[in-house]
Length: 234
Image 1: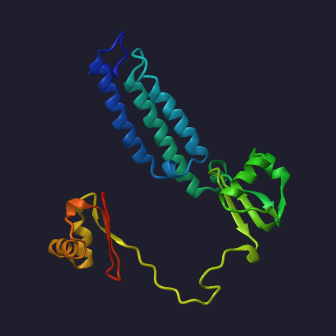
Image 2: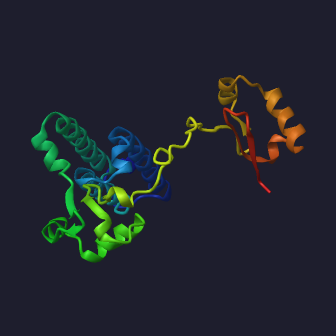
Image 3: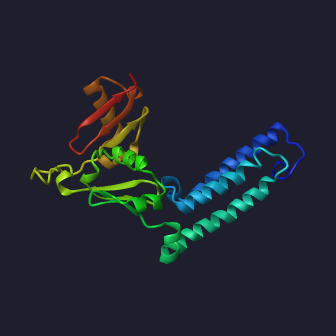
């Protein structure tokens, strides 16, 4: 496997093999790092993503660099990353380095300009984040935090908070999440079994209710009230 090592030149197939190996290696690395590194880019996540991307990119564009050496380096870095995450769960001091505390930007309807500078954001960015949260007036905000992941958490004064069914003393129905029983022409037999139904039932239901077949269905859901909702390709 010469494509792993440093070469004066690589054939087209060797370039392809490098790309394929690097792709699957990155998939494994991402799996080891966990969903945290994908769902939220905190300080430590940003550092590891930046370094790993830089390490793997070079051997994929320069035949004189070893792919094997890059993979070894990445493995060590991921081990350090996972170890750092684990240790931060045990020690508060290390956790504050990797996951700093949120910074209050608005308190009691007033902007904390000192903390704006600490978070390294401008008033324009703050206003933009407030607009994203459908907040039009700073004085309606009792607290707003700049989170480590680069998002803003907003808490309004009680009189400006949205009205909920509890506030109106309305009867609240239990939460009901519809089950997906057909997706892209394929029946989910596990969901059918969970609902106590079978293939014959769903085929008959589609035929009698909608006069269609499974091959016509993009998505079909079924809830606890036995409401079947069908979305067709056309």
